[in-house]
Image (cartoon, rainbow, N blue to C red; front, side, top):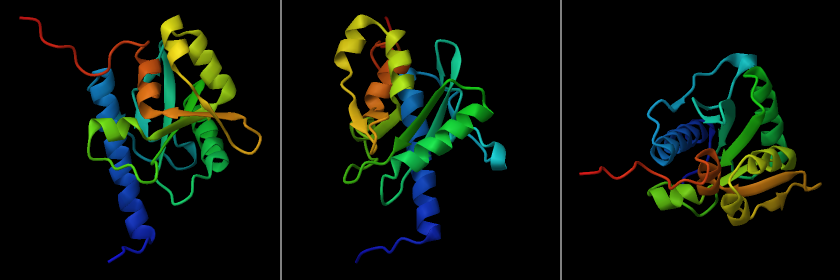
Length: 169
């Protein structure tokens, strides 16, 4: 039996995706302060809060839609980044066929931003990380760059291993 998509199921999927991204980033960056944000009407500031890169806030907009529609989602992230005075707008989008059931699968979800934002962030990243990240062009005019959520977390974490540090005994 195939579930039909309606407003209720779409809203539920969106909530599940936001919670999964929140959980993944908390784990990956070992930062319990990361949280889902409330809606702020026309002054919305993204879906996930307390994410920073080099001391600057990162606007994280989370999407689970039937079609990618990256230009529209990126425009929304840009507006919301402006609302929070963030130089770093990002969209995390559910990748078709990849579930939310494990850390590995979550890390394979889509993450994208403008070419300029990704280049600025990689410029501030260690050379080894810059060499590792292989973004794909995205959008009709190729003005966005697509990476994985795992690579996005690695950029935020300055290339350090993801997840909590092992306890030293």
